[in-house]
Amino acid sequence: VTGVIALMLEANPELTWRDIKYILANTAKVGDIENMAENRAGYKFDEKNNYGFGIIDAEAAVKMANTYKKELGDLEVKKTLEVTSTNVIDEKEPTSKIEFTIHEDINIEAITLSYKVKFYPRSDSAFKNLRMTVTPPTGLFKLITIPSYPSSHEANGPKITLNHFYGESAKGNWRFDFKHSQDPEYIENITMTMTIYGTKEDISKTANP
Image (cartoon, rainbow, N blue to C red; front, side, top):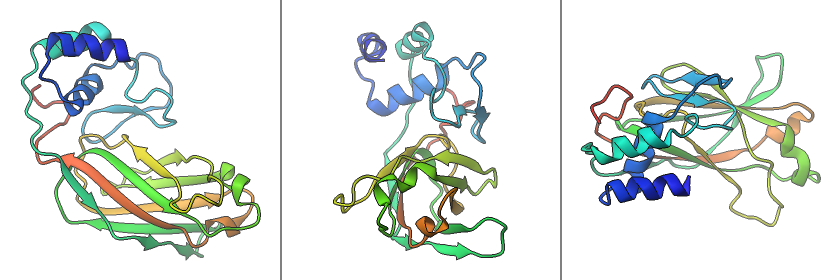
């Protein structure tokens, strides 16, 4: 990746890190990669987060960098207040949910989730079996595997960055559902904030680069 970025910057030294991400997302090759799902902005992203937008196409990326004229505009940052989860009791499997409402119409470049979970005696290993389902305003849910929870001395808890919704509008209701395959107690008292990084400009797959 570093080598490709160096070639892109050699072709166009004016590129920012946001421009580079936009170019790589628009030129990546999907091929026969499994688990690639297309979002509402036309981008395909690996739902298991192993391949991101796909495999880097160095030639296409450098070619696009050479003629790149896209204006991404100012970087918009929207951070929600911290919300504590509530239990969902009307389902067969115990779940816990967190909901956010975003009022600003921001086209997503990335989402960062900062979360903490009530500590239990086995907290260091408990989160290997924790799963999160994200339902964005479009209603098309995605199952995200989240990292194992760190040692209890890490007061701030882990962060997750999601690129699955690149180019989509953040405006509307977001819901995050948590499940634990072994011990339902581990999904209690999750607190989380959601930070959206994006732009007012159109960065969908069909936008003119």
